[in-house]
Length: 238
Image (tube, rainbow, N blue to C red; front, side):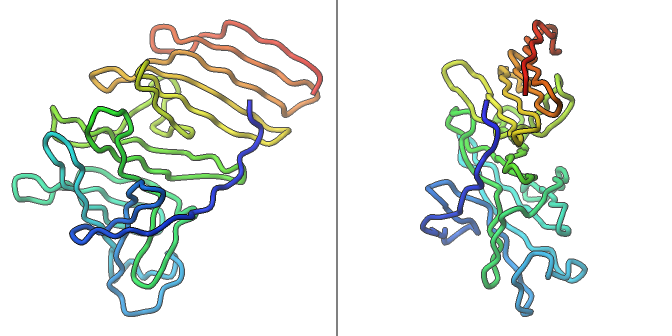
């Protein structure tokens, strides 16, 4: 179990699309918002959101392409809208923290990624929305649902949250693996979940480690009936 995580540096060549506002870092397209204000902005908190809502139009590739728009309502809420039947329709809001976002001239480079998260051939939207001093990547996952022709936010029913801890997908097992980092005297967690065809998620295994006291405790869980069941608890000197 890892105790800490070094914050990554956003290093890479910036590649701009001529038809959409987005950026590529290490070949992964990221949502890039445009600022229309003539005022020089060096930080997202400098924007007067009462006068403008920075936006990004983007298309998700797939069997049937999906067209979306993000608007920054303020420095903590983004609204997601879909182009459908020649109309722009509001879908939902997304809470976010502009952690490691970059502002350059009239562009805001976010940590919202366009990528094929579940390796099914259709672009998904993976949004790193919050973090902390340990560099945790608290993420919201939107899966491209071609049946509904819309993005669907994945919900973790076992932990009652839509936030995923640094999620990674294993195509061979259809498994979402997550990692939560903590300090030497904090807590850490590694979990796995199976993604079903209907985009529901089933908990499989979880290891939770508590190092906050004089002793270190390790908890092992397995998924049962959609919930976590504790199967073992061990302790040792911290």
